[in-house]
Image 1 (cartoon, rainbow, N blue to C red):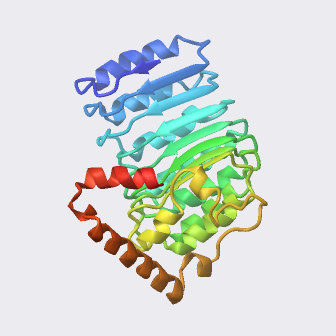
Image 2 (image 1 turned 135 degrees about the vertical axis):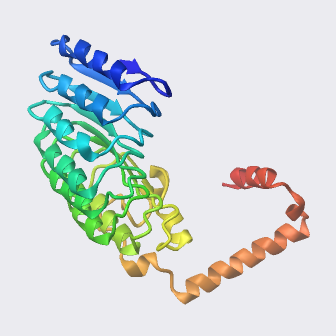
Image 3 (image 1 turned 180 degrees about the vertical axis):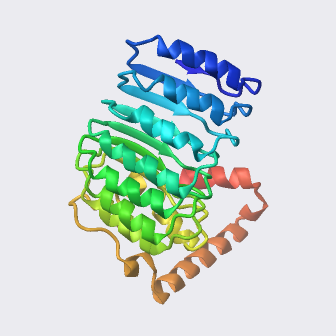
Length: 298
């Protein structure tokens, strides 16, 4: 386990030495490498790391390169080679804020189909603005081969994902019959619409989920009240139209979009609450105090 987070002076030369050491650990079965915000690292150092683990029979692999803005999609072929022929049970790969492309991102996610024994998958493309539909579509295809998968965190926040890519991804999600705990994040995906929420809801509806967390916040094409209604922890989402306890299919577009009567009723309720706040002087409370009061009501 190497936790090297925020070691800003860590260089490629250090990684070359680390790679040499890894090559000598033939019996290694679990590897954790955290290079978060080690901003001096480039493709050169990471390529050597991935090459060094090609021959290791790892069962558990956790590599975090979040915030390494000098790292590009040139490392993807080495990642694919490093994953090949491994009987991994757990894979955590955080590529947040690296310079990945949709073309090579799709090659990486397609390669995951070979990890048929995988039990836990955590995959982050957060804030990779060139990643989008191709990557999500190939990941959906790969999920169909992961029959053992029971826990996952998958993040496409602030990417160019659209409804088209979501449709393919959702088809893969629907096949995860052992999935018990799942987190899916699409924060600031500005090209997805409420149709994406419907497709994902239908995919999640029949899964044996004990925990589900979705994040559609800050998606401009989604009305805030809809995005917030179907985002959050399992106690919110599992009781929503996205997941009925009897396994019935999930939301339709009509259910997601309130009719005019519902909007009028909502507006009336808001005005009534505002009037009550004014009468009792609650408008003079600080935002922090008001939030504390609302939490107690909830």
